[in-house]
Amino acid sequence: MNIRVRTLWRVPVFGLLSSLLCYWLTIFPGYLFYVKRTELGDGSVEVSTDPLRTLLFEGVLFLLVLLVGGLWAFRPMTRREIACSAALLVLPLLAVVLAQLLLPSYYNKFGQESRAASPAFSPSRA
Image 1 (spheres, one colour):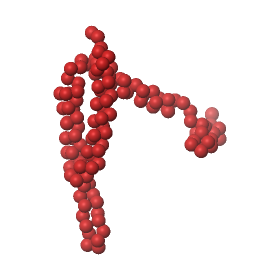
Image 2 (cartoon, rainbow, N blue to C red):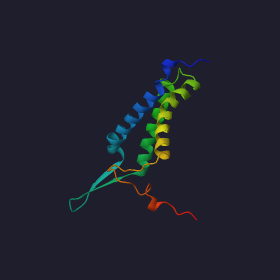
Image 3 (cartoon, helix red, strand yellow):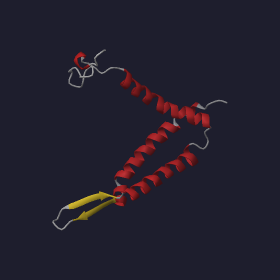
Image 4 (cartoon, rainbow, N blue to C red):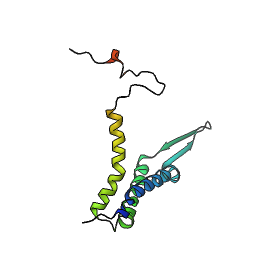
């Protein structure tokens, strides 16, 4: 079974665009749905969020992204093409995370030696 190279861009682009859209929908219109503003007697304003409405709003966004992705963006793709396309998004990010974990960071942003790299703070050997 051959993988069509022209379809490999779909999962990364869909993932990035849907995350950006959901972020903006959560910040701006979502604010009108699940944030409650109460003006107190002394003129101050109390702002609180309703956890149930937040959960419902984000659940509906999640289901919409699944429906749009499954019925529109990824329908003509095979499972192998979807997996390879998702790997194009995940593998570079995984490489960055592994580099941050495995490569020692001797200097912080000001060029000073960090405590983790200093021999004075290394664990003693018994």
